[in-house]
Image (cartoon, rainbow, N blue to C red; front, side, top):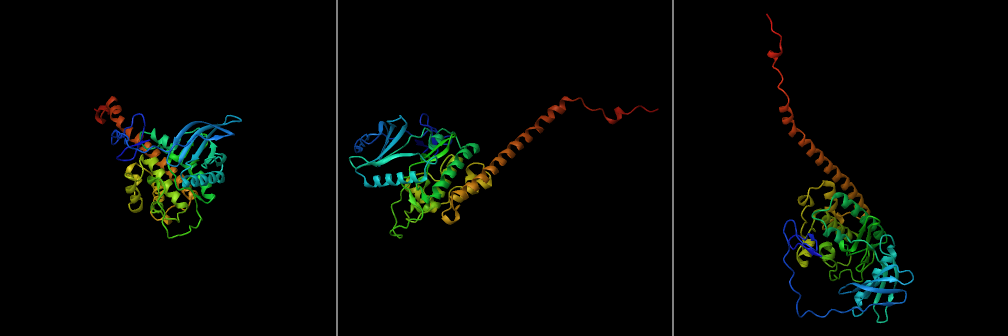
Length: 352
């Protein structure tokens, strides 16, 4: 995934170019002394057959697989055996996926530990693009119709997640499947927390975890007492990017986190024409103080739905105004083609 280094706009992989800033500079060559990455071995499970490595990172790997009994496509996620926190994260993810359930998240078919001690989870292989890929293909901001078809299903999923008392903590376009057949599915619950869980030490700050562009101020600070409104902030950042073409803040990770903590994001209406209700609904999500944000996904969904109605009305008014402005422009030409009306004197009969 490539972004414009100046504004953060997602760019097509094949021909990356930002409408405002042009093509980004070529990526630097990889360092010659880079450490050899840890290799996660292909899992061997009696009921599932791993066929292809889909990706590998610092916490583990994901394999494309099939269920042996019926060749149903699956994905096997394996945590690194040498990383205890990766295993704990994957256990939390599996528990959250089971608790939320289908159709809001991928189905979980199996979970446990491999002979080497690494944690694994087998889940449904979702044949759909992620929101990040959809945004990559856009030349600019998302249309209001496409926004509505994506944002509302995302909020409906989040209503279920929050109804279970869960805080996702890593909402971003890379963690949302989107398709017209089901709307949206959420995944990657590796950082999930219980909203009402009391930390052992409420005064102790943790290392900030998440994706900088979508982290709430309290998450950037590593506060242990984050709640549902932290995910509301992340949703606001995602919706902002969908409609503006770039995230509220962009730059080096440390700078982005500092901006979330201390800077007011540029007003959405200054980046793109926008109805006031829709802009207000999204900008409220990005309030520094959680008390000033929508309390939950249900409240936000209602505000976004009202904003979408207002934005469609604004666009219709703009279109009507443009059509009305174009009509008088043809009048002079029409009038010029008509013969001149006779004067009053010429029309009157002669008198003796």
